[in-house]
Every structure is written in C-alpha cells, then in structure tokens.
Length: 397
Image (cartoon, rainbow, N blue to C red):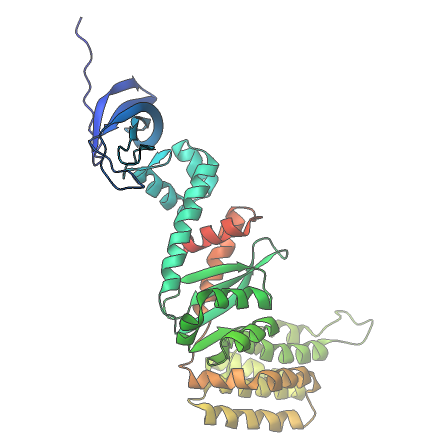
C-alpha cells in the first residue's frame, strides 16, 4: 500500500522542516529546527556548536488552508566554551509561543475587533494577544514621542462612562496620539511633560486644551514658554450657553398654562444656534418673526453673533472690535444671563484671543480621536485597566 506523502514549505527564514507530525483535517503539526549551525552566546558573543540538549517548544503559526498550524521547534541548549555557561538559541521568526508573522496578524486583528475576538479567531489565549498588543503599542508610543512636537493637543475621555478618566495627549500637527495618561488632574499632564524632558518640551510652541484649570496649571508649570490656546469648540459652547439661558427664560409661561412653554420659541432652539451667514431666506424670516415678539431674544442672538465674530475676524484687532460690540449689547442690561460668560471670558481672555496669533489651531483632531476611543470603549463594554485602554487606543489611532 502506498504511503501518503506531504511536502511543507513554511516560508520562514533560517528554518528547516524535519517532518510532519499531524496532518489531520482540523490540525497541522510540523516539526522544525533552526538552520543556524553555531548560535552566538548572549554574554560573550562567541559562536558555539556544542549542544547540551534539545527541547520541544510548541509555537503557533498562521493557519494553513483553514487549519490551525503548530510548529514543534527543536530548540537547542548549547554550551559556550569560553564562559562554560549554557544558553538556549533564539530565532528571528519566533516571538515566544507564536511566530512573528502570527504576532503581527494578531495585533492587526486587534485594531479591528476586540482582543477576545482576535484570540478566538486564531485559537490562542486572551492573555497572549493582550500582551502582544500592549508590547506593540509601547513601541508605537515610544516612536511617536521621540519626534518633535510643535502643537500639543490635550483633552480628556473616560474609560468607563462618567467614572474614570484619562488625559489624551495628541500631536496637533500629525494627529497621532502620544499618550493616554490616567486621570485628568494637574499631575497627569505635568507628569507626562516631565517624563519627556526639557528638550522635548522646549520644542512645543502651542498647546490647545479645553477650559480645565488643572491642565492650565500644568501647562504654566511645564510649558510656560508656549502659547496656551483654548479650543474654539469649547469656547463657542460657553457662548451658546448664554443664549440658551435667555431662550429658556423667555419660553416659560405663567404657572398653570398649557403647554408650560411657548412652542414657537422652543421649536427654534436649534435655529437660534446658527450663525447669521449660515441662514437662508426662510430661516431668517422665521427668526425675524420670533424676534418681533421677543426683543430680548433678539439682543441675546445679536450678542452671540458678536462672540462668533471673535473667531470670524481675520486678526486680533478685528476680534477686539467684535468684543467691543458685544460689550455695548451687554451693557444695556437686557441679557443678564450672559454675566457668567463675561466672567469666564475675563478669566481666559488671553487663551481665547491668542487663537489669532498661533495659526488658528484647534482640537479637531483630538475630538476625532476621542470619537474613535468612545467606539472602542463601547465595543469592549468599558475598560477597567488604564494600560490596556492606552494600548488599544494607540493602535486604533
């Protein structure tokens, strides 16, 4: 009876096939050995061919024709003659219990799916895949932080909804995530900047953040030479809060009225947030009718428009002129709800107006990154480990 014959080509460098151990429909096991005849001692660097013993190491490889493949590596333990010590040989194609090409595939799959799903797909352990992801992300983060950074973006996001937070630090020029530091306090950002060193910090010229007092303290302590700019999105949201307060006050009706609020004013809540240059003729006519019935709402809308003009101006001088027009409207006393906005502006006026001197930076890229991180968080049903969340976030971005 003629025996079945099988030839295997692994496409692994410096590896030879000694034989096929298992050739089943659901499994393939191949015995392999290294073709390096005289490995070098890790201590002395001298080649040695004296073998003390051989031990079988099982290494998972990429599947072959849909079958899980396992390599049984006859790993030699050799004797270094100069130092008389024993050492085991290494192989460039193997990384622990998996081949290097399978490790790359696992990390790539972990970018598109959960670690658990990637582990099940290749029939390996969750801890193995997670360790590869964390190690690879560490290399990615280290490489990114070695590059000079001119614009630094800082924001926060949560690893569990409204529970624990991380500080996300992004290179504003490239959009790459540099690090995700646990917590959102002064120490979180200050510790990262201190670890980068004074030379790296000196290259940072602009820092963009939200209105966090904790971040402001860290930036002043570690990046006092750089211009600190508030993100435009957060500032505009502060401005819109004043108009929202006026609209809510106007739409209320006397107690006992049905409905309890003016429906026309309520239905216009999103339209009121639009800038004048973004309205068409029909929308403008609708607002004009609303303003005719509620003059105080018109004053609040005009005030918000002048605050928008802080960013529509071409330079700092134009922004100051828009600020003067806002002050004239606010000075009439018709919109006392804007008092908190005035106080906030006085606190952050340098960080807001410096937007015109720094190339008009924004945290748009870091907000995009936060959206991806929130999708990642939902896919994993929340994270409990900061290191795992940072590793997944670095690979995802």
